[in-house]
Length: 214
Image (cartoon, rainbow, N blue to C red; front, side, top):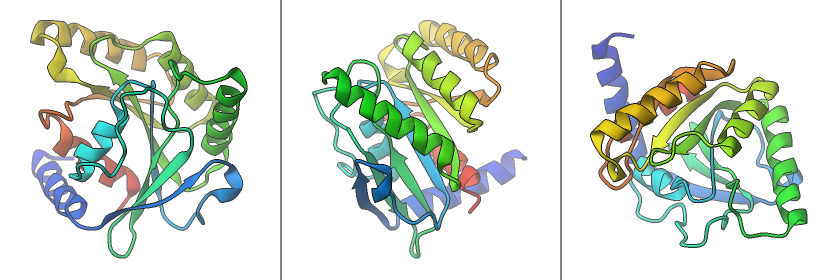
């Protein structure tokens, strides 16, 4: 894709996200999933990676996804519709890693996520969010491995890129790219973002639009 094509896609994505974006439903179990009528883009990451903040920045809303000071608040699959009529959905998946929850509850989340990833025919892409201050951790690698096994293509997105020095960020990007190359289902391109500063948001919107095929 040429730079001109990318610019046009980004412009269209910005316009689309400035239109209708609405919360649809929360699914604590697979039986509550919405009908698989449009493509879906899922977001996953550690409980304190800034997933809600990124979703809010991506959609240009202040609180469409609830940001919480308590990691692990998202315990269900949350669906948001984009476009009028609906062109695709965003899926906020339960955070993994540091959730303060009983083992049985965590296992329930894991089973929900794993089954959703493997069986959702309309799942067009998953975005794996990684904190730029730390780079990929073991829990991130486990998630990437799960996606590899489920044959679900995914993009790795670094969050909170404004929180570290440029020289440190370069190192983290290189490490993350090296990690992505080890995984068969990962895109080699890494997205570097900051929800607070708006860094990389336009490019990520364009990528989401392209992945959704709209």
